[in-house]
Length: 320
Image (cartoon, rainbow, N blue to C red; front, side, top):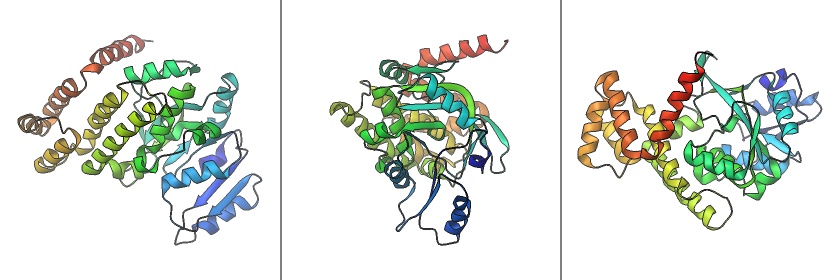
């Protein structure tokens, strides 16, 4: 357990058993028994991941809280480095770092792709966060984030209707409303599996289309009611970007399934375009690249300049 391997120990650790039907709670009690600051709680009903996170926000009395799932692994320096970031930039609503991807047996699968707002430790003002979201989208990875507990509760906690995107939504809302700290250090690893919460949602195109719709509506509502300071038009950009990236989960789908996926995720694309896209996406590696490129230009024209800047930046940084 990576929590136990921290060079700077956590002051408080809360482990919640979601009404398991095995001996999980007894194992949890064993971990908590001789460790000051470790708390264990057994649920009286099955709540699910999102509601357990909300329960933790309410139960704890710490200033900051991070959430660790079974598929997350922390670098031994995680707590110490993030505590240093908080001391350097106090008062932010959220702090985050970058993350690696790993396989089922912890084999390395490379860096998790996400925008980088700065190549040094920094804090983004609400205005800077709004501008970056529009230009690049979120740099915040859910399992690599530390939340200001009071601010998170002020915004209503995690929205269970958004399912596996609940953490992504709250983290964005905190950043654009109150500001956020960031370090480019890689301090977390995520074992992304198809059977996990995020993987299960991503594998259900029709269900994920529902998440896209609910999230877009929630962004508009929270901005209109001045609960969260999302920039105008962000919901359109977020939806297009999210749908585009979900397509990678269906690379090996058969033609009929791929057609249903395209129809669910990209409802504004016509029947003939879907036919062409389906042909390209099933025509080997080059066809896949051609289909994705066409789709990018079709639904994300606002990101063309940003993508060109990223390519130039990577080319410049590589030699050093």
